[in-house]
Image 1: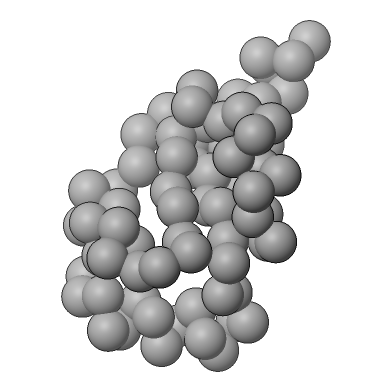
Image 2: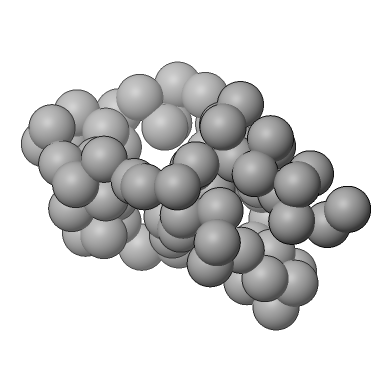
Length: 74
């Protein structure tokens, strides 16, 4: 995945200052493309923390991330 294509997709969705949390592992190509974007961060569910969540205007969780966070917070 290329940064330019990912940026265009995020722009369509209105994601400009977002934290994206995935399940146990994050797709390497996605993470690499997102790493080049200002104000976009990607974390695995195990790395999710309050500080990072509060630093962003938008939070995106995958279905796997929600399941893992539910288990972690029980």
